Image 1 (cartoon, rainbow, N blue to C red):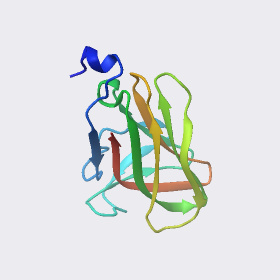
Image 2 (spheres, rainbow, N blue to C red):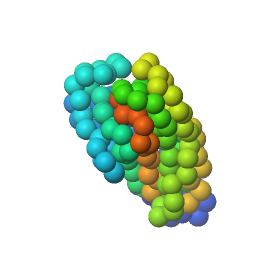
Image 3 (cartoon, one colour):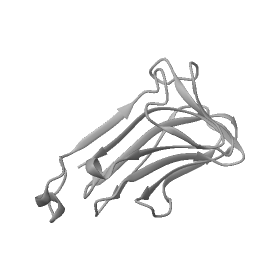
Image 4 (cartoon, helix red, strand yellow):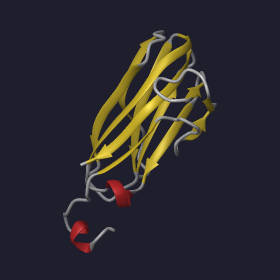
Length: 147
């Protein structure tokens, strides 16, 4: 619960949201192109999400959970076809997306995209994983936490 003392400079308690895409998108949503759950290409569980060429998926953490916190983000990914850039980005409130981490290669071995950001006010934060026109990826095992 957000209290008036928190609005006057206090901090939210820590939070962690995470998942493995074992059976669905774990609260992530397709935001452009095609991002679909798959029962193959998993890293540790029974499923993953295929983010196709020139596509993206996003996850929004509400302000009530993440306002005033330092947020750390991590998602595992690997190329399925092609070579190109995968980008992990964030948007605070109604602002524009800012790149948090990116990689360009054709590696078919899982690797981690991660980074941290400050959410100084009482704003939602949206995290986005996107692909460029040259690569489709599998995504698995993700975590978003705030402290």
